[in-house]
Image 1 (cartoon, one colour):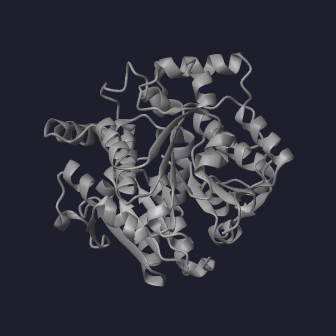
Image 2 (tube, rainbow over the protein chains, first blue to last red; image 1 turned 90 degrees about the vertical axis):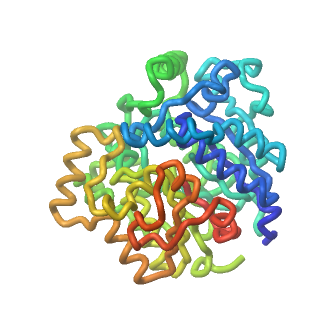
Length: 141
Length: 141
Length: 141
C-alpha cells in the first residue's frame, strides 16, 4: 500500500450549497497540501455552481442551516472567510487537483463546456471518472 | 493491491430524491461496467423509494434544485433520460450488483421484505453490510 | 492489505439532521463492533448538534422525510429506538472511536471547545484529520 502522499482521493461534488462546497474545498485543500492528487467530478447542482456566470455568486445554504446558521455563515464571510472557489484555486496552485464535469449532468442542465468557469479542466463520463480515480477513495459530497 | 476490475465498491443510499438516486445509479452502472462488484445498502428515504408501490413514481428533488433545476430535470426526463431504476436494472444485468435493505431502516419505516421491489436482493444489518463490503470503499449518498 | 479488523474508517459528519446522525451512529457502531478504529470529524451542522446545550435535543429531519417519514421516525423514537448520541456512546465503549471537531467549522459557528459535549475528544484542522485517517476510507455524511 502506497504512503499517504501518493494516495489519490476522488470527490464527487453533487451539492451546490455554500456550506457543502466549502466543506469540499477544505477537504481538497487539505489533501493537496499533503501531496495527494485530488480528482473532482461535478454533478448536478455542484456543476451548476461552476458556471462562469455563477461561480462568484453567493450560494444558498442547506435548509437545515436555519436562520441562526445562516447568520453565522454570513458573518464568517463578512469577517474575511475565503470563498470556496478561492480555496479551490489555492489548492490547484499548491497541488495536483483535476476538476471534471460529469457529461450526463452537462446534458441534464443543457450546459456546454464554454459555459463553465476555466477552473474546470474538462468534461468526462463516469467510466473515465473511475479510471482516473483508480483504486483511490471516492467521497460523495 | 488488486487491480480496479476486482475492487468492490459499497454505496450507502440514504436519500430518496430523484437527483441523488440518479447520481447513485450512474455511479453503480459505471462501476459495474468496469467489472467492479457493487454493494448497495438502502437506508431511510432511499429505502422508501424501493417500495414496490413507489419505485416507478416520480421522486422529489433536493430543495436546492429550485424551479430552474427542477425544470431542467423534468425536461431531461421528457427527452428520454432513463429513470434511475432502469439504470440500476441495467447495471444488475451487466455486472455484479447486490442491493440490500438496512434492517434498522426497515424497522423505522415499518416495512416488511415483501413490500420491497424485487430489485432488492435482501435485508441485512450493518454488521453484514461491512462484512460484505470487505475492505472496499464506502460511499454515502 | 490488512484485514478488516484493523482497517480504520473516517466519517466526516456534516449534516445535523436526526436521520443522518442516526445513519452515521449506526455505521460507527457497526465498524466499532468489528474492531475497526473510527475517526469522526465534525463540520457545520453536525458540529452544532454536538454542542453540550443541544446534544440531547430532538433534531430536525431532512426535508425529504415529509409528514409520513417524520411520523415514522417519531413513532420509532416513541417505541424506544435509541437516540443517535446513545448509539455513539455505546460505540465508544465497545471500540476505538475518536470524535474531533473541525477547527474551521468551530470558527464559523463561533464555538469554543468548552461549549462541546464531552463525547467530543478534541478540535483539529483538516490536515490533522487526514493524518489521523491515514490511508483508510473517508465517508462524508
